Amino acid sequence: MPPPLSPILGEHSFVNPTFNKDSEYGDDVAQSGDSLMKVMLESEERDQQRSQEIARQLDESFQNLVQNLAQSLVDMWHSNEKRARVWREQNAKNWRAFQVEIERMEEAF
Image (tube, rainbow, N blue to C red; front, side):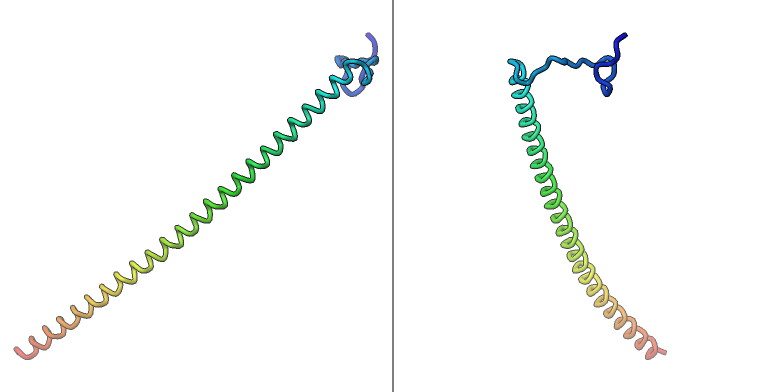
């Protein structure tokens, strides 16, 4: 068995020792390589644009989430303050009514 044609690719590799980039096929290969490189660069650019758009949308969604959460917390705070005020007022009325009832009972004895 003859030695491998390419020490890197091993014995099953095919290397055309007569390949000449100036041959009639060389130009086609070069153009194909250029076309492939152009397609790969365009694809990479589209992927990068998509990634940037996704990152922008995520950032916008996160900002909206934080704003909504902050607004919900403020609304809950105001609601709790209102409930606490109503509870204090009702508690004060009940305490006054209780004191009046105690005074009336003391007078009755």
